[in-house]
Length: 215
Image (cartoon, rainbow, N blue to C red; front, top):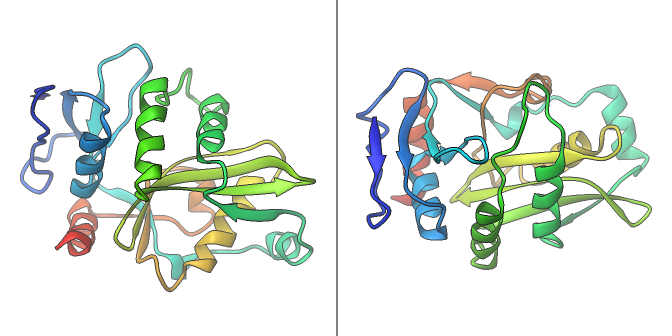
């Protein structure tokens, strides 16, 4: 297992190193520079608060190609009736903090800590991280955030305070950027995103698409 040097922003090459389960490295830090470098390589941090930082690049990778988005009749009606309103990059930190507080099935805690929030906010200020908000009656009721590497959007987390809020937001922005985003990296399998069209692809295929964004 690779242990990262806090003084050196480096990672093992995910194309050459393929550990069982996708755990690529341990340690390091969550500074904006390291996070940005990691996402360009196809890695992301995921661990429980109080533990060492764990860096992952799973194989296969769970992704959504925007043209594959599935929209149910009920969701089409919700969008058509304008049940929700949508904005971008209006309250990045609020979205992230709501994601931190969201209860998740089969998870006791969250990897979203204060250090991660601070670094993502800095990446947002640099135009590398984005938030997408869902509103109802002028109240923030859902949203998601992530990092954009070229035309690949690396989704990090989402939340919903009312039924269908996060799903409506995800569908709205996926269709809005259907011709701009080559794919959305969903990282880890979820039934929620699978129902919207996300699927597993080989890690090497994901890394190939990602590398095209930074070449």
